[in-house]
Amino acid sequence: MTVESSIHAALMARVETITGYTVVWPQKGADKPEGEHITAFHLPNDNQPLALGDNVFQRQGFLILTLVSPLGAYEVVSKEKAGAIAAYFPRALKLTKSGATVTITGHTVKPGQQIDTRWETPIWVSYWSIS
Image 1: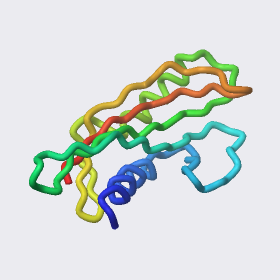
Image 2 (image 1 turned 180 degrees about the vertical axis):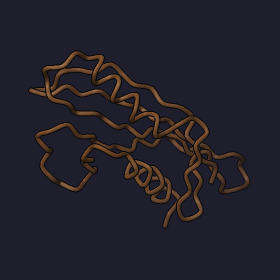
Image 3 (image 1 turned 30 degrees about the vertical axis):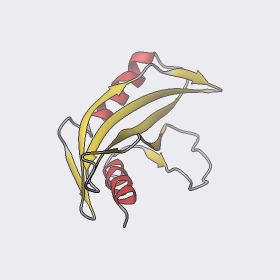
Image 4 (image 1 turned 60 degrees about the vertical axis):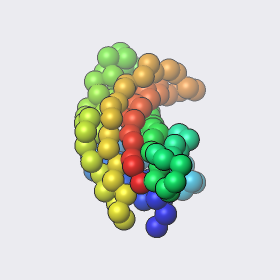
């Protein structure tokens, strides 16, 4: 595996541990479920070399999870659920896959918004890796 695919796999393996929700995976092409679910999206940032003479990079980015809920409840309900999802990614959590170690640096529950007939609450999980 490449470093990029190892980082992606480590993050997505952690997403698989979230219970109580169907996860819609990127590039799978499945229909979105009618009920409450999570979409997962990996947004890497630009890699920064640690030194000119080596091939070691600081790799950082975001795992963006979006809690998709039906309308009809107060926003505090979806914020509470989004906070519980974010708790699967505590600060300083280390995830390892195929030799790449990813460290979670934090998470933020962003403001939700109505998209068609659903309420979407984004959860941004930040990470970095030296590899």
